[in-house]
Image 1 (spheres, rainbow, N blue to C red):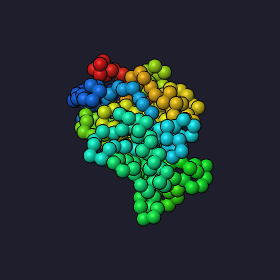
Image 2: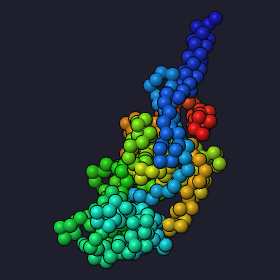
Image 3: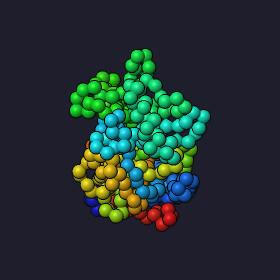
Length: 319
């Protein structure tokens, strides 16, 4: 046998063996996301070096980070804002843990409007409003107030924030607009808050993932771009949900935004620790997809479809 033919055979066998080993993932641990009783699997490959956090969930829609998300003159999201203000703030009576946004929405909106009409200087007596986790901050009269765009195409809107930042040194934009991971253009998942199974398995803001919608058979690479409430496992950016639904027309108000919610179970595979894998900033759909392609290739999956087939093989364990 010629040396060239022999080497070709050896390389082919080695490559096939590598691909086979890469796809031999098994269940290392199983936990339950208690608030919604959803199973979470931690998969490990044969080398015990690569891990995947796998679960299935429906997906609400997250708009935080978009300059169109919240508008002080449209707190219900009826005409201008993509969302109602109660998804960006919490309103409580003093000494009460209850968020009126959930228990008395109309009252919460009225309290916010009084706060707004004071130029954000005074919260109505007997109430407290928490907003700094979602709305950008600016100093006015020596006091922290929500940042409102004063010029440009987003004039009048609130600046809103994402947990994941582009870490820009310059050109951050008014209300730090450019430093946020834009939910309208970047497919991103919201990581459930509090202590939970997904975090126990190593998921963190900035980790890469792939999401697959069995109903449409569409998939996309994505990133964990934000954090959310402790009681909900599934929430995607506008871009993530649009890609999984196959729609290209962005929403213009809250009603259209909420229609992008995905009620069927979407298969999610998070790669824990990948937030440090070949990082490229500012985050874009293109460089996130390239990073996931690189990870997939390194893991021995020749295509995204091969990776999804492996994920689907564990679906019965999630029921």
